Structure formats: C-alpha cells, structure tokens
Length: 88
Ligand SMILES: [Zn+2]
Ligand SMILES: [Zn+2]
Image (tube, rainbow, N blue to C red; front, side, top):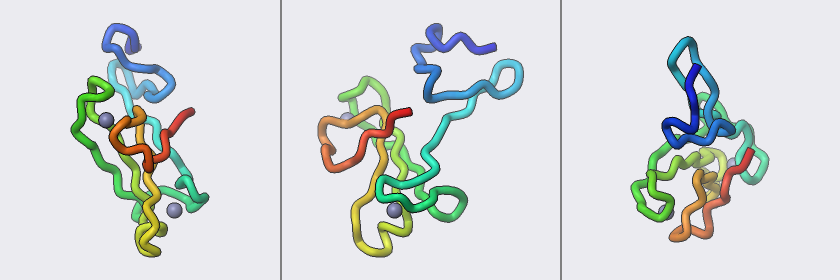
C-alpha cells in the first residue's frame, strides 16, 4: 500500500486504489449545498506556487448557472481568498 509520507501526500485527501494506486478524495456538496457529482461539477487544476503544488479546484455548475462564484480549493490559495478551502 502507498506510503503517503514518501510522496509528501496528505493521506486524508487520497484513498488507496488497488495495490499501488491512489485516488483523490473529492467534495460531494458545493460550499452552498448543491450536490456535486457527474455533470454537476467542473474539476480543475490551478497552477500556483503558494502551496508548492498545483491547487485542485471544484466549481459547482448550479452556482455557475446563477452566476455565483462557488469554488472549493485544496490546498487553500492565498491569491484566491474568495475560494472556499476544502477540508476533510
Ligand atoms: Zn453550488
Ligand atoms: Zn495559490
């Protein structure tokens, strides 16, 4: 099984997949309470050096259609305080 520390990964945000694989955990509701899943969320990666790694972002389609900015981000980004930091 994956040793998270060996890859500088936080085991809370990943889950083992098979013998040597891993999968990212992800939020199931948006910051405003809409369900997130297939066809309801835009998963993105935001290049930035503030966290020494790219940020993962999840943008809610339902909020987007109402022109409300509703984005989860992990790790938190100092350049986007309007994005809600996702924490497990
Ligand atoms: Zn939403
Ligand atoms: Zn950042």
